[in-house]
Structure formats: C-alpha cells, structure tokens
Image (cartoon, rainbow, N blue to C red):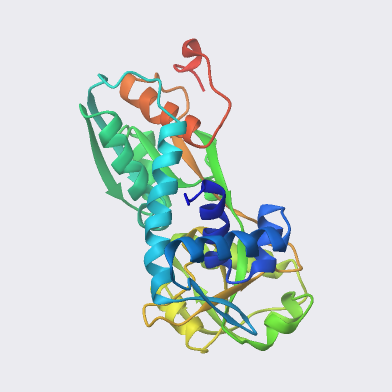
Length: 308
C-alpha cells in the first residue's frame, strides 16, 4: 500500500499541533479523516507513530523518525510544484542583510534552494539589527534585506511582505490554561511571563499589551529563543511568540503547546526590503521572483522591476 501526500500532511499537522482536533481545524477537515489517515500510515509503516494521551498526541520514537522523512518528502514536492522560471544562468553577487530571527528560522532552507536553482549566483549574507540594515540599504552596502517588515517605518525603503506568522501563547504540556475555552491577556497576566527581546520583540509585545488594561508579569527578559523554549517547556513561565519560531519540543524533549489568544495580537510579517527607486539587477530580480513564486505572490511585470 502506498503513502499519499494527504496522509503525510495530516500526520505533520497532528505532530506539530499535538491534537487531532487542532489539526482538523487548521486543515479545515473532519477529525475522523485525520484519525483514519494516521491509522493507515501506522499500518503501512508497521509501528505506532503516536501515543494517545488525555492531553493529545505525543510522537513515539518511530513517529519522530517518520516526521523527519515526511518533512523532506513534502519539501521536495513543494520544490517540484513551484519551479522557478528565472533563468538558472543568472550570475553575479547579491549582498543580503537579515535579522537574527529571519536568518535563524526562515532563510536557511531558501538559501539552500536558491544556491541549487542559481549555481552561478553568489549570496553574501549579513546578520544585523533593523537599524543597521536600514542604514546599509540606504547607503547601498546591501542590495536587499529579508527581515520583519512589520518593524520598518522608513519611507525611503520599499517592502514586500512574503508571509505572516501568527503569534500564539506558548505553555508547557498539561498547563491549566489548556483546559480553558478562551484565553486572553487577563488570564496570561496572572502567569509568570518570559519576554523575548531579540528583533524588537519586547517593543512589539509591549505595544499590543499596552492596548489592553493588563500587563505581563515579566520574570525574565532574554534575547534567546531557545532559552524561552526551554523555560516554557519546563514550566517556568509562558510567552507569546510566532508560529515561525515554534517547535513542539524543547532541547530537553519536553512538550510545548500553543493557545490562540482571545485579544488582538498582530502577526509577525516577514518580507523583502530595498532602497526605494533602486534599479533591479538580474540577481535582485532572481531573488524577488523566487520568493514571489514560493509564496504564491502576484507577479510583477518585467518592465516594473526598476521601479518600486
């Protein structure tokens, strides 16, 4: 019996969200469809992929191994169905600036694909904070940047959003808030809070908290996402962070659950930036076209690449 892409997608969603009900909502399908798909996979693989617990679905050792293969298969399928039409013969050097979060949790897989698609394209990467990136773009030190576009306000720069990553509440497994039908700032403010500071995360967080009548009870500020992950997983506090940096497990192998926040929390926007009025070179066009096709963005006419 062969494995279908549908089964793999249902399995991955369940593994990432930790609950069949959550995966069903995320995929807009019935819970029974996911349950059936997982049972079929387990029959084909010949091993249990999940441990069914009162709190959700935990991956077995076989399940974790299978998840790694599932990610690779779906990645290859995505590459095959989103072929880049820009000539692979494009050559030159492209200086790309990126912030910490983007270079750590977004760019690596795309850099690897770009280097395979455009073997003659030399990519020079620079990790910087937003202020340094903006200054570098305006002085032509960098050709383009990939960063959190929601933080850019400089009118001398043009931005193009690639994706939005929802911010949710991170809690450890079996946390009392998981049993609530609704969780908002009022409930979160009663918990010890871990505040991430990198990439202006603290500033962004305080902006949406200040719109409410509550404030987080911050016990630690840190620039390390992994520190937040471990502290939350070990029951030391909670945090609101984006899905892009979320992983279901800490380095110690402890589970991290996510909860939708009832109150308004803006998504984290990731995208491209360049100096307004820049005339696009072939290598810049290649980078922009790659991301437009990867994220299914509306294409731009070739004659408009030299404009905003």
